[in-house]
Length: 328
Ligand code: TRP
Image (cartoon, rainbow, N blue to C red; front, side, top):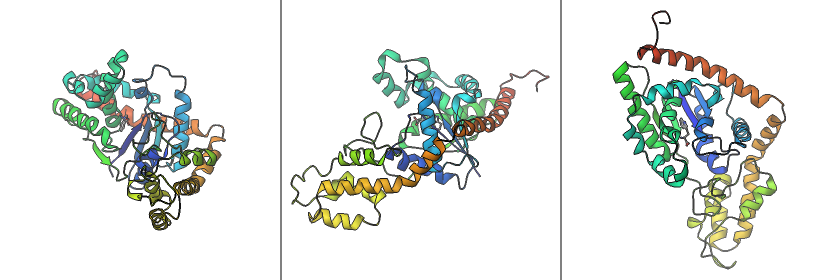
């Protein structure tokens, strides 16, 4: 049974794109693997200069995870900085990571371009910290999106280099790409993302959800109500495939025969999304009103994660010659 490790930046409340793209997969992996899921608050600092929302964002993300079915009995759910050994390992791994490898990582180049006033040392080391996350827990399978593949390649290179210099300690982590297709935002053009404000939060109220659904862009060539639409190019239709599997054929027929208009179609989608997430929202409401539940889950997660972390770090230090005779 290989161990799964995944990290997620604390972006706050999750949206439909996160849910279909990542969270569903995190939940499914729990059946067959020991899973370690980490909210990476230190990574968040590489692009944040304002941290007043950080704790709220961590809590919101955890509540979404729990409501979606991540099980704290089965999986380890914790916050990166609560197990500080990862920062120690980061420093040690930085000694076997050539700077040239880090400077050619696409996400580094992209972020350096986006925030030229803040190209900090931590940003360059981002993939080393990510490698430390994974290998501290000897993670072998890493569920990620396409965009993280270069980071994982680098992680494998660091691992190979460490193992060949100091002896075998870490397994090489492999990406586990989920089959979920990319979910477009309500603009129908770009990937759904909070920063583009084209998202629908899964924990939104039914009224908010409907409002966002009504803002969705449909077939841009369908201008009049009596004109047939083209579901193939319509993001509302695409969403029906997830949220209205039993009605999708009827919707297709009615749209292409102009017996429903886009407005009606979007109203229906809003209702379907609300129906789909109703049990989720109910659960989230329940756990968010239990005073210590979220904090307790994280404390327990950190405790269990620490046990693994300490053991790995000890092994690393021993291999690197950092232990004195007495501590060996
Ligand atoms: N870089 C990842 C992202 O932006 C987050 C992350 C940090 C991560 N550490 C990780 C993902 C370890 C997988 C494994 O989404």
